[in-house]
Image (cartoon, rainbow, N blue to C red; front, side, top):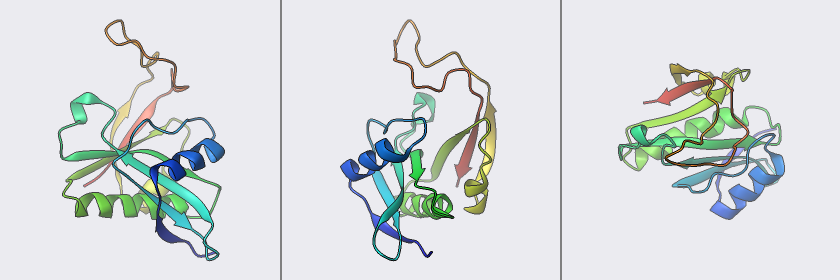
Length: 149
């Protein structure tokens, strides 16, 4: 099966994530989204790109792939990671980040030319006394930070 890039509206990307993602909801906002469709035009995967979740990384020149999701289509995530970086560069950004959770191989990111820049230890959750947050389902999971630049 051959995949090709397609534009995806915010609502369509969010609906795809709600239907197919194994452990996350759609992120609350985005700068842009991109999709991968098959030869029949069926949407098979999406990537959602937004401002970095970590405030200290939100420098105005950095974006984050906050969600990728596919229905299992072969090489879809690599296609989307590469396209997301090309689009971010075309918009004037100098850095694109994303995270994988412990247990995820990162093969799609390596295939798209991304590099590991940090390992993040497990944390008890996103909530803090100064900024209470609801659970995201990612508590106590180590993460790897990846960069395209």
